[in-house]
Image (cartoon, rainbow, N blue to C red; front, side):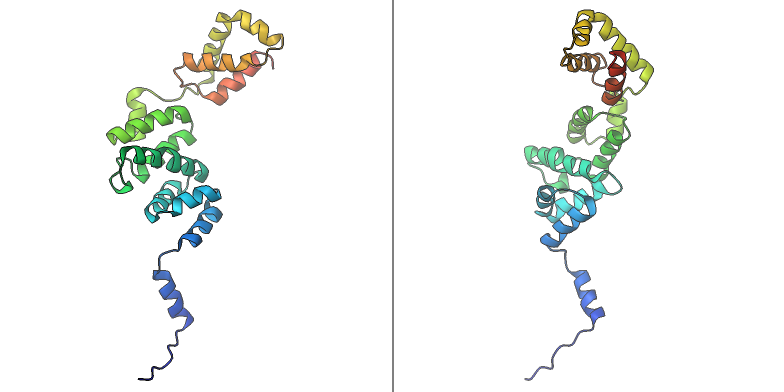
Length: 201
């Protein structure tokens, strides 16, 4: 039988398009445009719709580059190692987002966050609970950091002299000693600033 040509209005076309899943290339372009992430990161994320959705849930109202690094690096890495799918992961998007919030507000450092994430993945506990239980909160009190720095400088007077004599590479040694003294909990930015001021440079 002769079929009449199908004529659709623009509204009908738009309605049909709205029900179709986003195609990988379009999603990749959108992730790059909306979140400012790189081509490689976007490519990894759009390889699987569930992965892309997970990333978007974590990145919502957060630093998207930090979110991409954590989702692709730590989170996907842990899933692969444990041979788990996102659907049965002990860490969901809200929980990972909660960990990133603690990094962003300087409650914990990025290095401590990796340890916290491991415990989250093993136990399913929230980042905030683990930080509280283990006393991992970053030391941001400049008075306390200053005391630690002074103790390190007092214990290494010979190296202070060498540093002032031009051995700039010793700065890293001092930072390392302060971080060690604080159990990795001193805010690295504050350590660097106070140490530079104390060493006169």
